[in-house]
Length: 312
Image (cartoon, rainbow, N blue to C red):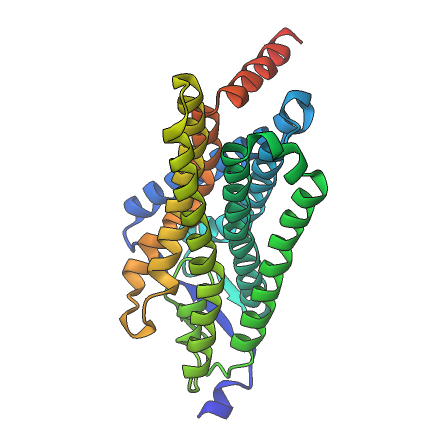
């Protein structure tokens, strides 16, 4: 039976959120709005930082890099998800297409987590060693940290994608998710996946646990340094820049940990769908909103850009 099922090309269906047409339309409109806000907002942040000389600092370099990652991340997940919501029966994804989406999802998501850790180190140096900040956070180091995030994300994506898609898939089936996520696709395999689950856990610890512990350690020193500040204005500025970053860390790492660091036997497709919406749609949308509202320099740059646009 297994040989017979594998003679033709394999296609996957993506699981819809609801079978009710009214609910599907509501979900489609909501996701479309979040997608448009995410792409337009992150694009605006990247352009504003790139064109404002006052923002050409390591902190804003990492923020622009994060915004660029969020754009690519949203474009990897959202278009196919929106298409599958509109026509769930007609939207199919081939095995190579599913592998490509999973690769970019892991690559960009892992790089995102690594970049958040690099941003925490930047804030640690800026607040705990302000006099040595320019020396320690050189542009060369910033480029190395950003490139290292991409390289580590690429390595994680390559090994997981190759490992999973070398498994035999018996026939065309429904992926228990609105995109080709690792665990739902792995469950469609007609083979023992214990080694693959163990590898996924190791990658999850590497991408989520270790960077999060480094971020937590950085914030222990940051909070200690902020408490010692005599200037109330300095404390407020430090807390405002750090709170934006910390909010993104909690959303990104919290959602990812609930999915990839829990035992695979306890994985629930319904819970997975809800949690995945947080880091595939909500987090990319909130990134430009959180940083633009909490950061005075970026807010001023946005206002100047708007005035230039309106005057022209």
